Image 1 (cartoon, rainbow, N blue to C red):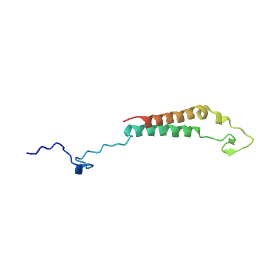
Image 2: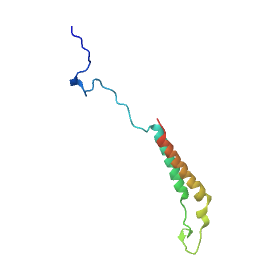
Image 3: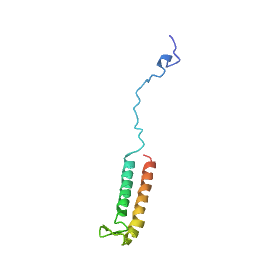
Image 4: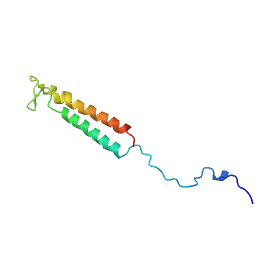
Length: 99
């Protein structure tokens, strides 16, 4: 009766002895993508709120002698950039959030 002390021989080195199920190693989950889409929506809404007529546009026509004060509206100066910044903060959160 021979007693075997090693389970493995040199021939078995590097061979996989049993099948190990592969775990999904992708970093982002469903929640990450949901937050990314929410952040993207905030950014798009912010840029849409910034849109409007030019400083020298009156009634849709360019007039170099006219001045349009609408470019300094609260919507374009305060609210729209706030939406864009909030969107970028949500994007950072979505990227750094763990599963």
